[in-house]
Amino acid sequence: MNFPDLNTQSPVRDFVNHNPVIAIEVFAHHKIDFCCGGEKTLGAACEELGLTPGAILEQLNQAPSPAAAEPEENWTDLEPSGLIDHIVTTHHQYLESVFPELTEITEKVVKAHAANHPWLAELQEAVYYLIQDLKPHMMKEEQILFPMIKNMEKSMSGGMAHCGSVANPIRVMLMEHERAGNLLHKINELTNGYQPPEDACETFKHLYRLLKQVEVDTHLHVHKENNLLFPQVLERAEAL
Ligand SMILES: [Fe+2]
Ligand SMILES: [Fe+2]
Image (cartoon, rainbow, N blue to C red; front, top):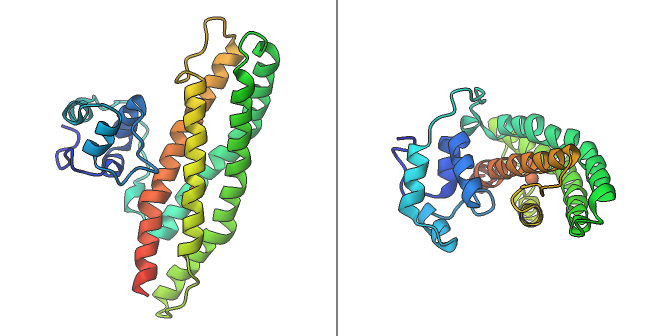
């Protein structure tokens, strides 16, 4: 039993915090949103998708633990400053490193295959907007919001109750996460859940693998911000 303390009334985000490898695998397979919709109970999230909550809970509990799973840094226990550093070095750096390759490969695939697969133009547009949204989004987090949070933490430990309002930038970030989530959803639909067509060449298949990786990583990234970092920060800001 992978989730002995959770049931269909538990928020989906709790499953991800408890065992991210298994929860993300099962949620991604059933398209259960655990980042922007992380507050919903498993039961409510399943019912919206026409899934049986008990059956999904059973799958979560019975899924075999991948033996070769990488030992993950225990990010669920981190304080805001540590969580920020973890998010930047794990997810922001990953996205920054993958964007140039993603742009280049998308262009190549569109050039070679758009004649036979006209929807590729729409895919290229969605990838373009995703990158154009996420780049400045991460920059705003790194240059404005995250330093604000770190300053707030410092002033709290120094006994000085001074902090700018973090609530407004957090609200903006949440809206931007929602937009990125919608674009990822669109990319998932356009690629038929990352199933390459029969005539796909190796580059085409590689593009789909890359897009799937970006989706999985971004969902976890947004989960850590929406469901762990931001609630902790808002709670502390309120206490000041
Ligand atoms: Fe981020
Ligand atoms: Fe973010």
